[in-house]
Image (cartoon, rainbow, N blue to C red; front, side, top):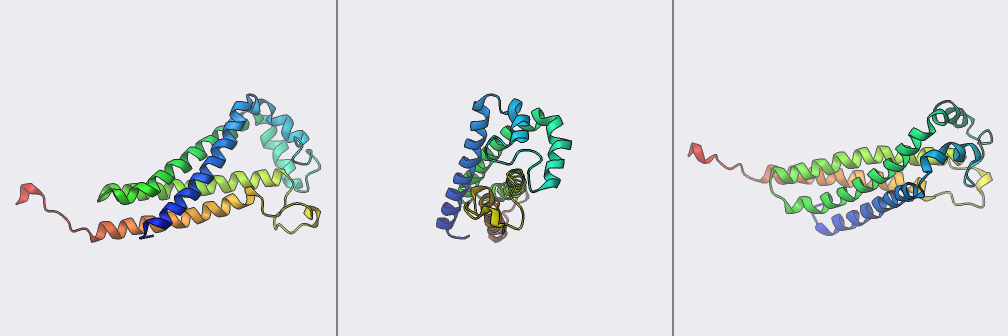
Length: 194
């Protein structure tokens, strides 16, 4: 990651992923009643998923009935604000990805470390959210299922965790480069000791 141009490319990808999550969350937020209507959407499928009791993932139906439906209002708020915060965090991560090389010394390392931590947490969160959405829609793992012959296998909700993992790998590279850069800078003597 010593060249700037790959960093720009990955920052653009991170902005696209961040905008996807931000807009998805804002759509739910401006819908106005997403948390209140989540329970009904989970029961009926809301036109995008099988109705409760008809999901091929029976274990997921049981999970929704036991844990999510009784607390659907809380989960509704968690989902919409989780998506908004995830989007904002990805956008901040893109700024950190571009700005760390402009900084010197410890601030460069701090910026790279923060970007790595944020991307690690975001990769876990986005994978969790995307898998839950796909299980709710009746998708199974592995993705080979003849019932979906007329639909795409690689939808955005399956691609986003893969893209997030790639961004995580890039973040590890940026952090390692920041560590190497910091190690190559000679230590300056304290002015009081001279």
